[in-house]
Amino acid sequence: MPATDAPRTLKYTVQQVLETMCFSEALPASDLPPEECVIGATVSFGGTLSGRLRVEISSFAASRLASSFLGQDVAVGSPLAEHTVCELGNVICGRFLSLLNPSAHLNIHPPITSETPIGDAGLIWQNFRADAGSIRIAFQFDSTNPNQGR
Amino acid sequence: MSLRLLIVDDSPVMRLAIQRTIQISGLPVESCMTAEHGNAALSAVRDNQIDFMLIDLNMPEMSGGELIRRIKQRPERPQIPFIVISADATATRMQEMFDLGALAYIPKPFSPGTLRYEMIKALERVNARN
Image: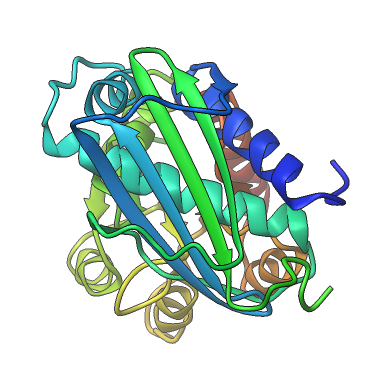
């Protein structure tokens, strides 16, 4: 897929990752209701492209995605659900950046779980409705140009 | 030949998912060890007979690339064939890993079928060499 448009590429990436890893459909949503329980993770990256990814998945959706990914029942609140959110963040980050700039030198850091949202400056974000809950993905580049270094 | 595998990935769910895929793949696997970081992988390689490795790249403390370089620096031991599995799908990284001797590079996300296919192809290449 040609990476001509960062928001479109992000939407494509999230849907592809969820379908391939978790056999799950994620439908884009312009607005999401506030969720009481959300698992959040942040992935920082450096190199040709630098910035951070934030993924927030409602607890019920995280549990459902983890169950699909692992092929076993994963209870709401299980550490496996948290680890799945982290790994989804890692995979979405790498896939998105690789599509944006296939010749980049990337250094993707291990995900960390965190309740702290990233700032609004230069944010590219997408909301999705998934089976049993919501998913919010936000990307922030240190430069305002998401295709920096191309 | 029954394989003794080592999976190196800092994500516990990815290690579990890869193990499950291999268990149901029909591949001749005798044992499937896991390591959550590079140092644990070096210990596993030192203390066990490992026939084949699946290595993640983005890990804390020691990257998969550094792990591969360290394992290759053991002149007294035969080289261990390996496949790289990574979220980094850039051409630059893939070429770097092929230059280090990777038999295959599987970008995440991958389907269970892709993992099985790439492992079979890699093992065919290993058997052809021997």
